[in-house]
Image (tube, rainbow, N blue to C red; front, side, top):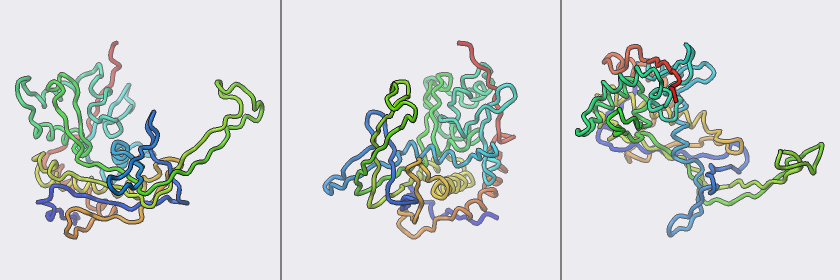
Length: 322
C-alpha cells in the first residue's frame, strides 16, 4: 500500500537535500581529478576557505543512474520492476540498454542501428514541422513511454531526423560533493621490478617512483537538487509526478547507503541527511519506505497507459555500414 504523500510540495519549485559525509576509515580521501587539471581546488570569496570538488555533477549523475540496475542479475532492481526502458539486442542477445547508456535513448546503439524501426517510431511520435517550436509535453510523454528515467536525468536527441536535434531536456535531479577547509596529504611509492630494477621504464620495466596526493577536510557535504517545477512542467499528471519524486529520492537514498565507494582511496559513509528546502519541516522518506511504496506508484502510472506495453521495448541492433 502506498503511504507516501507529496502534497506539501505542491507549491515548491525545488527540493534541496544535504548529506554529511566522512571517510569510512581514517581521514584521507582522493577527490575526482580532471585531465591537465588534477583536483578542482578553489577558495570561497571573502572567507578564503580552501575547497575541493570531491565529486562533480556529471559523476554524481552517472552514479545516481546506475542505482537502478542490478549487475549481478542483469536486470532492473526489484522495487522498480515495471518502469519503461529500452533493451538493445544483437543476434538475439542483450547488448546494452537505455538505463546503462551514457546518453540514454540517444545511444548510438539505439538510434544508429541499420535496423531503424525504433528510430522511425520515435520520428512518428515526435513529429514536428521544421518551422514549428518543439512541444516538450510531447517529448515528456514519449520519454515516459519508452525510458522513464530520462525524465529525471535529461536527454538530448541529437539526430537531425528528430526535429533537427532540437529536443533537449535538462536534468531534473542533480548533485555534487564538496569538501571544505582542505589540506593536501602528499605521499608516494615505488613500482618495483623484482627482476631488473634498471629495466626499460618505457615498456613497463624497472623501478618507477611515483608521487600521490590525497586530501583531508574539516567537512564533506553532498548536495542534491530535485527540480519540482520542471517535473510539473511535463504536464503528465499527479501519478507521474509522485512517481518521479519517489524515484528521485530513492536514487539519492540508495546512493548514500550503497554507492559511496567512489574510488579505491575514496570510500565514504553518510553520517546524516537533511532537507534544506522547503524550509518548513519536511520528513525525507527512508529507503525502506520508498522501496515499499514504489511498486504501487509504478502500478498507478501503468494503469493510466503511460508506459509502453510491454514496458521494456526491445530494439534490434545491426551494425550500420560505414
